[in-house]
Length: 144
Image 1 (cartoon, rainbow, N blue to C red):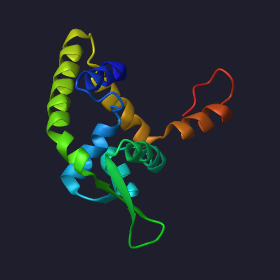
Image 2: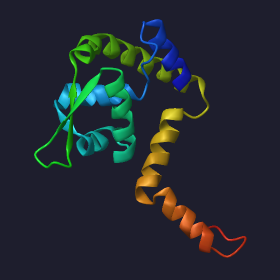
Image 3: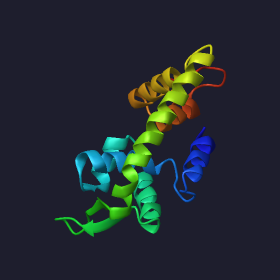
């Protein structure tokens, strides 16, 4: 699916644009300048993932970084280029959401529901904990 979304962005004249940029841009458009930590919470991924994504976005002239009140904190700001792209990205986001809904309708069990349930289960017991439990479970016995 990600490849299809990336191809759609390329068709719009954005060949370097990655699908993972969109949630961060949308969060910044909604909340304004934000720290990496706040973006990670808003998007629902790790601090490290947002930091790496933001580094790529800086190279694509989509965001700028500045130091926050705490010298260790980095604040992410939309660039003028990103602001110009927001209407196009919002239209593409809507189309992608509709396309995902049509895919869900064709499946025997909606993919979006499976993903939501998996994320809920992982929030209750992270995968790292599941691995640790499995490593200490007696052979042939389910962990957890």
